[in-house]
Amino acid sequence: MSPEYAMEGHFSIKSDVFSFGVLLLEIVSGKKNTGFYHSDSINLLGYAWELWNADRGLDLMDPKLGNPSSTSLLLRYVNIGLLCVQESPTDRPTMSDVVSMLSNELAPLPTPKQPAFLTGRGMMDSNSSRSNAGICSINNVTISMMEAR
Image (tube, rainbow, N blue to C red; front, side, top):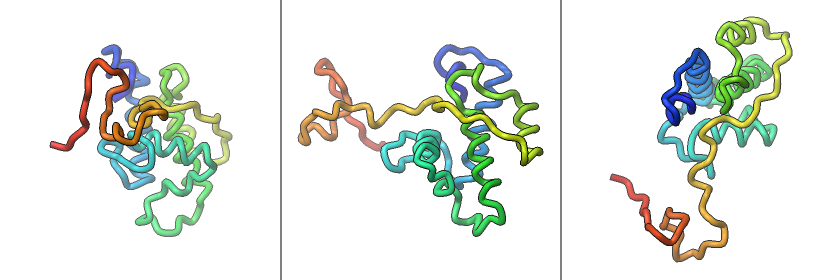
């Protein structure tokens, strides 16, 4: 779900682009966006962004894909996926632009900006004591304990 729809209830043609980007990253990685817990990322988008910034985009690839004949094509798909999930709808391409990016492998791609829904689990104050490691509140007014159902 696009951030503008989730947070403000605004739906636009760029909301579908966001969803397509999530789907593209899920296909490349073989992982679902929801319920994703790897490293300090709250979701697949954050994990893909971490890898992309570290020039390790190929680490996102699903091992079931085997040895792809073109790693540059796989990196292109990750780039397109990250372009589609940028936080601001104005930064995202249109679906016709996405189709053009997918079909023209030689066209240069812009550098993606930070995706939406990047923050989450890693937001706790780094100065918090080890005894409070299970406490997820960031203030002293309430205590929220994260437990599985």
